[in-house]
Image (cartoon, rainbow, N blue to C red; front, side, top):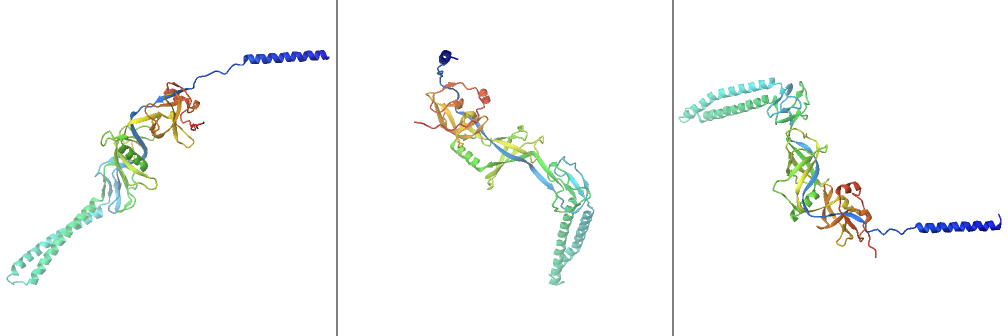
Length: 400
């Protein structure tokens, strides 16, 4: 290639490079000038809500009796079906009564002998009383006759007591139900030896209609409740109107409401909690002793509650809750909050917001305090699908 061809190639390459530069410059556009970011807000307004507390607990029988023998003997019969309902006084077991029948007959015979002896002794004492005045008998003989009469009368009283004891022991050979309720399985069989006061119960009877639910509540929550009542934040609807609902293990609610029976006065020092006992009607026997359940207790009514959707409340790295609001000038402001509890899908805010505040619930990731925004209506269903609930955004720092 000669010099002329080289110069020609260089000229063509330069012209082509210049064309590309001009074409690229022609296609370059200025960045669009967008408006303020859009955010969806909820205007906070006070409303009346019922404040409830959900507490864990277990069911327990209203009445429970462990059936034990009160006399010794061999079990001859069992008169009940395991798992059935029994009534107080129904015969459950029969102990061999033969020795107790003999003891009862012997006690009655001894009593009859004592009653027969006392007759002659009484007559002798009465005659000596008449004769002692005329000195026909000595004073000592009369005193002996009077003492013998008292001894004979005492033997009659002892005989009556022995008869009653023998009768009671004979009656105890028929082991009866002390309460009405549902009887469990028998822990002994016919032919076993029953011993008075034995450690192992023969069976157990439980009354489950009504039934108790014992739940635990922390002492700190009780103090908070009392302060809220004293300050007027919470109000009781009426005296003794606290209704309790029961959430069962499968996540369904028990159809009948319960009533608070009593609150224990002793706090467990290891857990910082105390026992609440709630009574529920149980006519169908759905609730059984020992079942786990959660009691939903109505504590009172909040007349001026401020509720904010959960996606409108974020937390800083220290865990402190805050919300972003839109002020009257259309700019974003940050508010540190104090939240009490969740009610449904909302937070109950105790401080940090006021009625009329517009809380940002959508678009919080696009804004920061101090910038202007465009407010659009909030759609709850859309917010649920947006996945912004629970997002943690650190608080913005002010710059000069």
